[in-house]
Image (tube, rainbow, N blue to C red; front, side, top):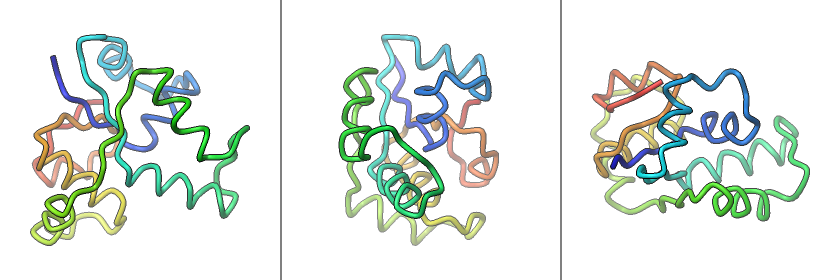
Length: 129
């Protein structure tokens, strides 16, 4: 059993059954023995992108995320003080505050990060794509 933290795009691509989702990512998500998590940081990022029209959902984000978490048996990873303070010790490889927090969460919780973004490798995060 593995604990998998989905990057925001991995969550969306899984839901959309996008061909951009790698075969290894699909295998991890399809394996029912794995516990899959979506960070509250990703929820916040999606809400912002929705509010500025960068991404469109068929239903409000307040319904979209819980519906897809439940349908896929994914869990929400809340943001803790420990996660936030871990960001302070991270090198400044990435300017995106959401991704920096997701990296901190993956490190603190010892999770595998499912992401296409190789910048996470600079943080020592175990990343699969």
